[in-house]
Image (cartoon, rainbow, N blue to C red; front, side, top):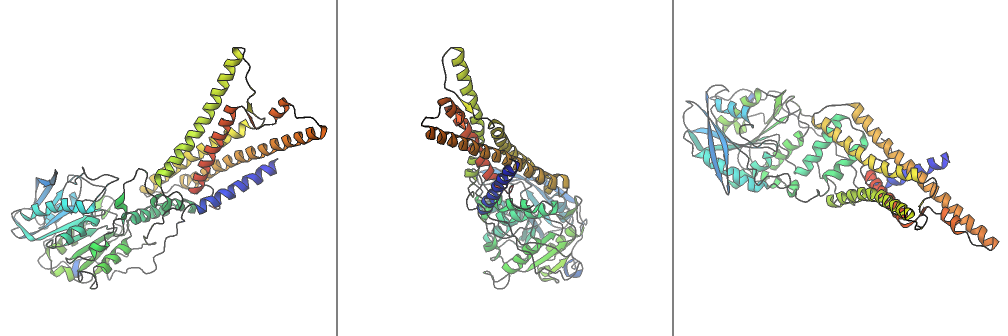
Amino acid sequence: MIFRTAATTAALAIVLAIVGAVTGPQWDPVPVTEHLEPTTPDTTIGGQPPGGADPVGTYDVRETDVTIRLDGATVGGILREPVDAGDDLPGVVFVHGAGTGLATEAFVDVAADLASAGVVTLVPDKRLDTYTTRHRDYEAMARDYERSVDLLRTRPGVDPDQVGLYGESEGTWIVPVMAVEDPTIAFSVLVSAPVVPPRQQAAFAVDSYLRNTDVPHGVFRAIPRAVGMAIPGGGFEYADFDVEPFLERLTQPVLVVYGTADPSMPVEQGARQILDATGPSSASGGADVTVRFYEDANHGIKIDDVLVPDFPRDLGAWITSLPDSATAQPQVAGAEPNQQYLAGPVPTPRWLGNGDLLVGLVLGAVGLLVLGPLVGLAGGLVRRLRRVAGRPSAPAGLAPGFRAPLAGLGVGALGTTVALVVYLVAVARLALDYEKDAWVVQGGWIGVRLVGLATLVAAALLINRSAEVRTARRAAADLADAAGTGVEEGRAGALRVARGLTTRVMLWCVVAGAAILLVILAYWGVYQLGI
């Protein structure tokens, strides 16, 4: 009995492992083989502050709240001006990344530092009535931010020909669009730029975070299956936005900035792609690009929540010394980046690439698991009421040895699904906090798979017991035929897996619901071979 159960369990596990492997793409990112090597660790432009550049802190800063009128909306903003810095000053409009929206909370340090170095800065609020998780139109957002450029150009003391852009993270998909649509924009600063489309960047970031968290190899299978599928409910068309055609048409000077401790961005690949896209062979004939890497700096060019001091120094010197600083050598400088894998196209799942289908299957399976016991309870209640009323009812119920494994199958499938979701949420929290916890990461994955294995044991017991009942029924029928008599009705009923309509409905609801969940669990890697 034990051997049969073990063998059947192993067979089920192998089948589910194969199903999981063939129903979706694997994850095999390409390692970076040619690293971008900075010429010097010194990030200053030309090795020293360009002549005439005022250092950070030279001027007091005056802050003014402004209102920016857009098509169909208005947003606020904060204008920061250097006091007594003279006229014909350069200006910068800041373009938000995905994690910021209010001018009072974004770019506070760098905008103030730049203003104190003689640059007029404008941080507008992000327009949020057309910006949601599911819908973002980067070209429309570029047109909205252009209104801030127009406003800054009209400010007293600002040279309208020297107004440029500063974009961070998601904002670096918008800035090149603005610079192409308005060639009079003087320059662009791209900070922590993904460069690759959002879907590719998301997969890269998840991969990087998971590697830092030391998750088991099998968990990586979820990356293309989650990021590559069509998100439930639709939307997210912006996930495949490609900024490359806009980069190729840039003509203005570009400053590219990364922190080497930013796990979410392809820092080397991004810098290299910008250099290639703006090279002499580009559609526009090329643009001057300067690249700087800051050691141990994060996505916001900060260390321990403090802006790296060299960054605003270099940024202010580069802006106020244009056009000379655009071609100052070295072109690439700073700390050595160490990107391990390339961000690349995300495979589309073959079978469960439609998120609506996946959600529908999970909800349907859970519904079956709930419906089955309810039908069984309702059937039992009806039979009890008939007996109380003195009315006979047909025999019903499961054959001996079926109730426990059937319950184990249903509860186990549902429990494994819940355990997997809880595990993934726990790992995501660790990954986003850039932390490690072997008990959660390794122990949790083993726990999920053990619960999944226990569910297969219940399925094996159910299959084997069903085979035993059918074998006994067949043997009884053969003996009855040999004796020239039929199998007695009571005896025949006792040799059925399930007697009564409601019992059969309950049985098949639980089996079908559990089977669907097991296939989905296999899809997400719970039953894959190895760790």
